[in-house]
Image (cartoon, rainbow, N blue to C red; front, top):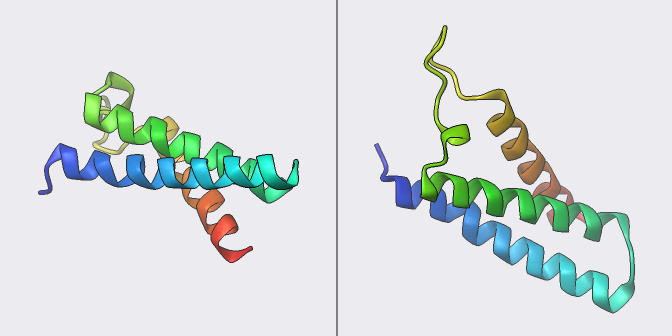
Length: 90
């Protein structure tokens, strides 16, 4: 099983790169749908990376019922992923 630092570093670094690239595009060419989505996705990835590295409670697995990750964490991860894919395709 990979360490918590490696798991948290990947979305953190990717989120920082995506957020800075999208912010630069916003400054240079104004508001565009893809730039805003990239900025939001980058910020979501940064929050997920920081949450994983810091060990925030919301990012831990739920122990009640079954052993599946929290829906909120999955939603944040999906938002960051799809925003990044949309930026990469465009």
